[in-house]
Amino acid sequence: MEPYILFGLGQKYNSRTASLTSNRLSSLGTYKFVNIRFNEKDTSATDSVGSLSADIYLSPLTKRSVRAEFQGVTKSNGFAGPGIAVTYNNRNLFKGGETFGITGNFAYETQLSGGKNTGLSSIAGGLKADLIIPSLLPFSPKSFKYAVPKTKISLGTDFLKRTKLYTLNSFNASFGYTWNANRFVYHELNPINVNYVKLSNTTEEFTAILDSNPFLSQSFEQQFIAGLNYTFTYNELVDRNKNNPFFISTSLDIAGNTLNLLSGSKTTIFGLEYAQFAKADIDIRYYLKWKKEQALVARLYGGWGVPFGNSTTLPFVKQFFSGGPYSVRAFKIRSLGPGTFNSEENGTSSFFDQSGNLKLEANLEYRFPIWSYFKGAIFADAGNVWLTNEFEISEDEPAESREFNEELIANGKFSSNWAKELGIGVGMGLRIDIQSFVLRFDFASPLQVPYLPEGERVRIPFFDGGVIISSLISP
Image (cartoon, rainbow, N blue to C red; front, side, top):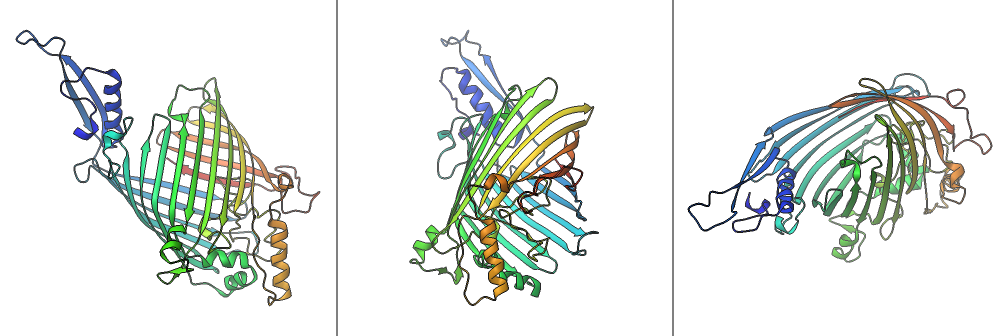
């Protein structure tokens, strides 16, 4: 415990030092309660005057714990499915405040009815292990006064199987640091971040999609990603007494530069083609609270990725997507964009993810209590993804394929008319908030559909715009 305690024998009492020590011990994630008591010592038999003794009382958290999260999603296009995530934690693993955690997740989604692709399904799963060490190796924890910095080592694997399309397996590893500069500011730096993606079990249908879409094909070719990423977060939500808290999070992801140096500017290393890109995003939220549990929440999000060197497009796993329960809720998950591109009109499977290297999004939500555990929400969402870099179209491609790609570039490219190309939706929601988890139901309908002809994009919500229904369970 000595590295985490800021006061010592012979020092003068300082309330700030005592408070920081309590905060540092609490931030280890090993103790439920931390209590430091200072008592005046009996100085009758000594010459010392006003001496204090310090007693530190620590109540440990349960050493081992298991948490399960359940999720259910239903959509108006007939897709539905459950999801589950189970997390196991072992605290104080090596008797030094270390935390070891394993998380496994699984989700299944299928189209039960409606649409020409009835019978399509998706299976996703993953396993991730984290080891968190309460020290910023190789620096001393005392170099950081507010909270104990942590070193985090992660290993994980994920798989995604799209029936009638492909299977995507990914393996990732990272080594990095996290620390709180103060109550509101949080940093995360991963100088080592490696991701390997393997595409397999491709069907003839998916191969045809790749052959006719060089943008998509090139994004799947970049299989090896290695670089660093950094995230800065300023979060006033930790202060429950603040009426108008502000939240901002921004991240930077750079990949391929070190591999480029190690390979002598070759396009491959270890026999694998690696990706080179820079990607940044920012998430800003403002909460206006009044009366009892009423709040107006505004959110702005922007992200941009630029491929260079070895890459002409961002790797598929690094691209931006729009639509779904955490995005523009009036549209199917990952179904917006790029720009005004219409995947169904161009023969692309409606179950296929649509992506871009630029994303803009905004949300406005009014939250209010109804009765007891029941809360309500009225919201408006807007957003889309676009392309900012063009890809080459081979002159040898068939006329139909060339026409498809030219339309993708023309409709997907970001321009000054971007506001007219936003997917906009409105809706209402019901939340059942029972302490340990929240059950969320959202009913949303489009107000502006970007892939319809200009002049026909504005719809009347809930009448001629269709309805997307989603439900989520989260802790």
